[in-house]
Amino acid sequence: MQTKPHEILCPRLPDFQFDDFDSVRSVFANVSPLAMQQTWLPALEPDFAPGFVRAGWRDEALFVFAELTDADIFTRATRHNERMWELGDAFEIFLRPHTQDAYTELHITPNNLRMQLRLADAQAVGRLSKTNSFESAMIARPIFESAVWVRPELKVWHVSAKIPVAGICERAQPMQGARWHFSFSRYDYTHGREKPVISSTSPHPIARFHSQAEWGTMQFSP
Image (cartoon, rainbow, N blue to C red; front, side):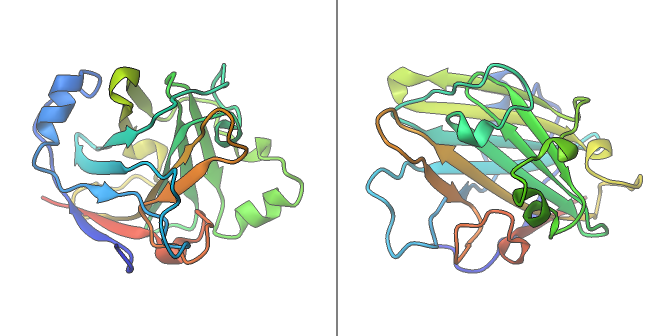
């Protein structure tokens, strides 16, 4: 189990179609995966389901590919920018360029709906949580694209995301050689279970996904 924050060299990918499953699976075949974990617990919950995430870049965009084992794939979300983490299964992406305080939180659901938040700094989520209102942090215009493949017969869903650098960075900067802090997490809901099973690629000692001390660092390779 990973106990220290990840440090990865994010590879430059060849040309591919991010919304074509065979193309995505092929281009990420040799990229090392990051595993979801529950480091805040002494052992994995009995209902824990594995999840793996791969990342690469090209054409000034980050690409993410997630494989999420799930025996009960569902969401009640019906439109973009709902509170996806409360409505069912959700895959989360946290990104913060090393040169800025503001960070972005992105959610993707099994029916390919998206939520986008921009948090001004590491303390922003605490301030917003006091009122339980996140509308002021919502980003209305689309800043990324996604594709989802749900295969209930195999108890798995896959997510592909294309995240242009312009939607993440406050100032224009070349992607090559840049460093971003990141974390991937998920909410895995099951009908009849009151609370979801949550997990993260970051080794959080407490289940607080916004704790950046445990986020990984990716550097974009030449």
